[in-house]
Image (cartoon, rainbow, N blue to C red; front, side, top):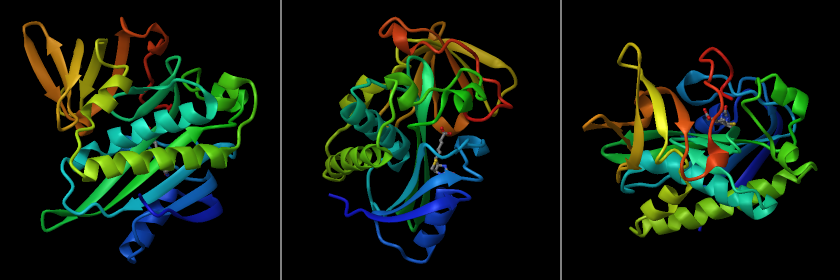
Length: 266
Ligand code: BTN
């Protein structure tokens, strides 16, 4: 199990930046920076992560060495968020590949993972997790109906530290299984709502969007999309946005609106 140690701060510019600095100075695996709010929270692809008091904002350091498929950190952590939130709240979130955690089609949280390698080995990974816990409805409205919080879903406040611990416990168990070579594919495939959906995707490398049906996730964590008679393999870094149009497996996870690319990450 990971031995978690905490650095709690009132406000950080970004817990990700603080943890990165600590990692460079040699902080051990399990070091976790937690902030009550962030002034410059960042999401994937450089987007802003709105971080008022009431959310969970944490970044933890891992030193996984020669772990297989390090590109799966985002997905594995998203699974831990789904499990941890479920354990504390009874809600049943799902994952919009590769890193969004949704409830009822709205974004409840997100995950970012930044790895640094040295001579073929991953020397450190900084994993960042943001979850809207007690964030108010008015703060969510500023994100134009695309976000939700645990408080909004349950109609009551929850203890943020319980969500934090449940996510870290779940992550620790998954990480142990992963390091011992067990296949986690089944675990995360079950939680990815995107599979089976018609999706509209824009790749950074191409003009215009294309549509297809999300068919699966390969062993390296890439999304497989079928399009006509062909299939395309998409890695998380290539994706600029994604819209689910219809979800035949779990209707509640359909995303009703197309994200505005200029808006905050919700
Ligand atoms: C995303 O969905 O784009 C990922 C969002 C990750 C946000 C978290 S909040 C804690 C940590 N610090 C940051 O600045 N970002 C991550």
